[in-house]
Image 1: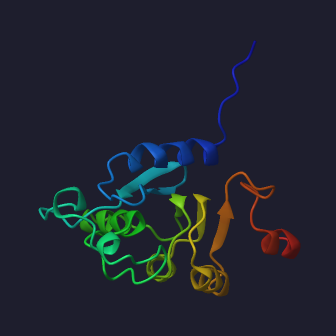
Image 2 (image 1 turned 60 degrees about the vertical axis):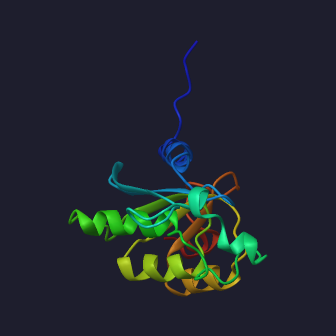
Image 3 (image 1 turned 90 degrees about the vertical axis):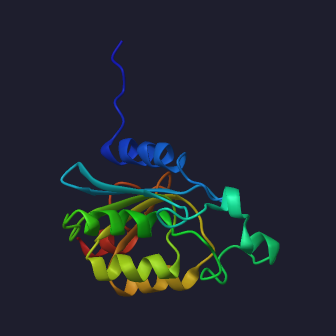
Length: 165
């Protein structure tokens, strides 16, 4: 009996969940990978900036203030997984232009703007995030946003399939 190998998208998506185990966020564990030509360029998980106390030690300010998910992201000690992946690539001089971002969750508006300006062309994610403006801006910038597990996962967006891209 032949063992089924995961597709590349499945493989990299599984790795995002391992990366997310490093997260120190008390609300949501998120992991991200930047990949080009089937090679991992950078990883990131959500947590406080380098050498600063994490939410586990300092407490969750957003939780204390009862701020709902998807709102007032600036009131948080942590950086998002996507931000950390982009920052790590920059720190070590790795070009991420035309790369693919794999993430456990859909990026927020702040991360989406960074993704657009960094030249990332495709995002593959699993979990939803309540941020319709992020989806809108990614679509306007022609960044493919693909949810794993949906009919179109791994084959391009509905919009791109219709246009023949």
